[in-house]
Length: 239
Image (cartoon, rainbow, N blue to C red; front, side, top):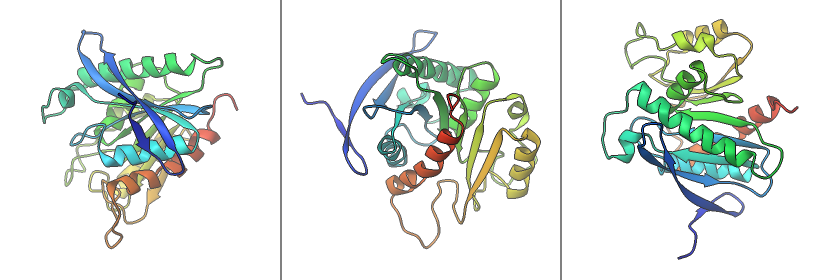
C-alpha cells in the first residue's frame, strides 16, 4: 500500500502515521510530516471539539511544511477513544510529553537537532502551556486562539500558570474571539513580559473565520503559518 501523502501549497509532503505511548501505557495516534531539511519542528495539538485530522490542522501543518518546518500533530486520549469531553490536565499533559519526546528524538536523528516548539489550537495550546509550566522542555509556545476565559465569563481567567513560563510565546488571536476579551488578553501578555508576543487577526473569531470572507477551514489554518514561521525564525535558539 502506498504511503499516504498530504496536499500542501507547492508540493506533496510524505505523511507518516505514528503511535505514541503515554506514561500509563495508553496509546494515541500522531502524524509526522517533514521537508528534507527542516529549520524547526513544531508539535501541534487540536482543540476541544476536533481531532488532529481537522482541515484547519491539515492546512496549518501543510503550509508550515512548505515553509521548511517539520510538524507532528497528535490526538489527545479522549479524542482517540471517541469521547466528546476533553481530558483532564494530567492526561492531556501526559499526551503532550509523549508527543514532544517523539518529536525531540526525530529532530536529533539526522545530526544537529532542530528546535522543537509546542503549539495548539485553543484547548491544545492551553494544555501545552500547562505542560511547559510543569517542566516539559520546549523551544517556545504558539497559541492559536488561547482560551483565556469561557465565553461571557471574563472573571474566570486561565492565566495563572502563564507567568511562570519563560520560553518565547506567540499569541495569535482573533479580534472577535469570545474566549479572550481583548483588554484582558492584552493585560495578560503585558504582565508576562517581553517573552510574550500578541498578534491580532482582525475580524477573526475563535476559529479565525472572518465575517464576509468565506474561506475553508484548511485555508484559514494555512493563513496562520506565515506569522508562526516568522516567529520561529526570529526566536531560533541557535540564532
